[in-house]
Each structure stands twice: as structure tokens, then as C-alpha cells.
Amino acid sequence: MLAASLAAGTFAYISPAFAHRLARTETEVRVQADGKIEVTHIYHVHDVQRAFFEAGLIDSPDLTPLEARARLALHTRDHFKLRSADGDITLDIIDAEIIGHHAYLYQEGIASGPIDSVSATMLRDLISTQINSVNLIIDGETTTLDFSGTDGSKRIS
Image 1 (cartoon, one colour):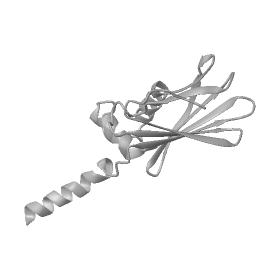
Image 2 (cartoon, rainbow, N blue to C red):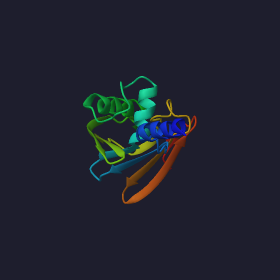
Image 3 (cartoon, rainbow, N blue to C red):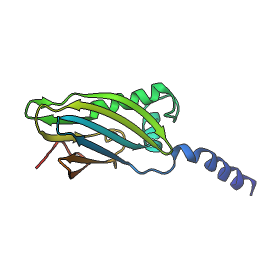
Image 4 (cartoon, helix red, strand yellow):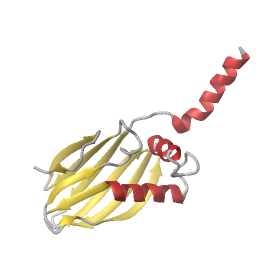
């Protein structure tokens, strides 16, 4: 009985950092009439903490340190791309913050022309079941693209 109680207590202690796997990221891309692009990525904090810790990208399963949030920002920069006829659209990292159970990462850029395609491979190299949902809001119209498995870039129709 004591062993069962200890095991349950241990599971309860470690579960907050490793629980609640959603394996889903939501991204909103807003394109203004002047070409300004505002991007908000919303990660489930437990997924990122666990994946980054298991991959050795952070020292503990905790995204609150600045260095851990910086790693998330760089990971996002490398795994999220918008393209126009002129090539990749440069997106600057604006901020990364944690609110409740979510990590928010903000990017901005300027489009010289219409967005032709999107690539969203965030966390998919670390979590095999990861799904990235991207909502593009252009001229008041929303287009949703879901990325999973080995999906590459998707064209905007």
C-alpha cells in the first residue's frame, strides 16, 4: 500500500510538466492592406517544454527562463515560412511570453506581394503527432491550413 501511495505521489508531482499533451499549435497570420504581416503562434506550453527537454534543447522542462523562450523563438523562425512570388518573406521576432498554459510567440514582416504559400513544421521534428493549424486572415477572409506528418509547403488558393 505504501509503495502504491508513493508511486501515485511521484506521478502527481511530475505530471504538471509532462501532462496535457495536445500536440497542436495555432498560428494566426493577419495581412494588413499596406502589406504589414502580424503573426501570432500559440503553443501549448507542456508540449514545448517536454519536447525541448527530451531533445536536449533546454536544461529543464521549463519555458519561463529567457533562454528557453529564445530557443522557442529561433525554432519558430526556422520552421515557419511565408512565401510570395519574390521568395521567403522575412519575419522578425517581436516577443515570446507565457500566459497560463500557452506560450505566445509574435512575429512581424512586410509582404511585397500576395502570400503564395505557407510552411509550418514547428515541433514536427520533435513530436510525431504534431499538428500545426495556420489561419491566414487577408482582406477579412480566413483561410485555414493544417500541417501534419510530412506535409511540406501549402499553396494559398
